[in-house]
Length: 229
Image (cartoon, rainbow, N blue to C red; front, top):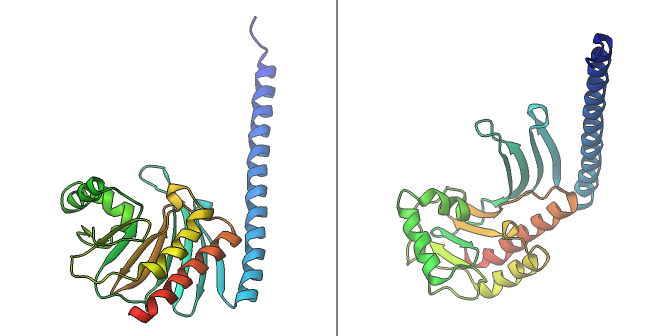
């Protein structure tokens, strides 16, 4: 038995109304979330004397939560890659004035064989994957530093002569973060060089409280590194 034409039309109208209502609910929820974030950022900025903002671009496809103060900035972001449609998440802290005489990267723990493999990958065609994991691609070829100990991770540098930071000052700060953020993508990757200090997570921290903690970690690392610069 075929449905009456009028019934088909009513069904399509009902479906359209459901889709519109669902979209309106999503927009309302996102809008409320943005309002809550902006209010939280305003409170944080007033309490800490920082700059804080929420940036939404391209119809909400890209969102950035930014914090900054004298000599540093932090940003968490999520966006959709136009070519692939995949979501990208990242969080970074930068302190350009905390400079280091040579490139050093402290990343997730690898055993000796894995560290050597990563170093070989960085020098060849497969280097993009390992490089992105540790440094986001802004450093050239790195070599593992088997002489480094006490960092709770694997240490690389641009060559074997680059001095390493004091693990007794950095490791307690990194360990305290990892105790409360055990996920692999939340491992804080430390990057040092003439361009300053960078701290990177391979995830986004989409809350004012978590971003404040992340900024505090970056500031504590910057303070720990200053005497050696």
